[in-house]
Image: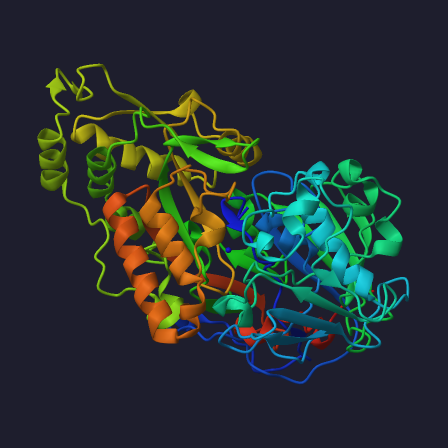
Length: 590
């Protein structure tokens, strides 16, 4: 799941369905959690009797103020998505396999023969000002994404599958010809005409059509180039979800009150307060019960696991961290990544050796108590048979790393190796700030690379603040040769949005004919055959490990600490449908 921007989240990560239980004499202190494996934790809290009203306090763990871009089309930050979660409901509910259902605010119909997508918003789905969500509100997000003036990072070739989007993006058309509103702008239906339908379209987060709406009547007077900075986006956003933002303290907190027009029924809580807490303070915040809902930082598990009156629930999210190598640049004029054959990191042997010199298992065991764990591929195991379990990835092997470098001509000259052409080799490594263990973890990796004779140094000599880090990646700062980052993934396994030639989020900037071919096959018409798509995704994972432009590092058990008066909080995919109407709290103060 910036994805923290570290987890470029392309998908909105919402708070799960949740209630706060009435008082009970049978308090669950979770003292047995000391010995209980986190992998065995439940995915949801126990169900108890509930009571209406109260204030729920939610921790937003980040070491930098959230940017406050409360628009799915304009933000790629998971932190912003979490902050906006109580109000920012998506158009579709899903089942536990991430398949779109018609139980949410809108219904979906795919016509493979006609290559059309029909989306109809339900009557009674209203914005927080009481106005019905209409067809224009469904169409408007595509304009936001495709209009160059917004500089939306969401634009890529996936969305160009919609007829007329590219022409609109290039300024050759004033409207998107492939989006039809059969009942007019004030109707409730849009029909999207595509060049072809894709197999991932049945899953949420597929990136071929948009799953959010924007209030056109509210935003239409804001010029596209002013939209991202507008107070209507940052200070007074409007949603059709269960809560509305009543107070925004920029970068620090949001207070939510019920949307009285919410289509599922009036929410039960009087208020939700989402507040930033620094990662180093997160464990103390959990132990002192400052928040009702807080994510446990893996490196702090030992500090919080014995906290009383808290339920811990966990899941392995669709999230992973990786090591990326800069081998090119983003060409804004062409709208694509362009490789540099002379890039110092454009040598497969060097990249592979760096991967084999990472002691990920030891680092995760030492600093995260096994909550984080090494992964072998760039498709996470929760994707089921799409995950290639036969891939071994990059396990720690200094002997193999040295042998690879020797064979490739990276000779030692004193302490450090030189490039095959004899020139000195210094590798600038960019990594983000984090909690107190972040520095020793990064230094541990650097020490291992030093052991194989690679002169790896931190970019600017230190860890980089969250926003500055991503600015450097996005703008291809020449001081960055390799970096660690992460992805919070949508529920369709297609890697297109992150690793394609046309994706600005492909921060390594690698482009190869084989990668283009495999990505095309993964999303082809043939891939409607499940086994064919499995085969191609397996081939892609093998190819990516071999080429090592992005090396998988680890994933984690996402543990959430929940006040034991909270009931019904679930991490199941089907519960991530903004069922905030179930939330309650006992012993509350108005």
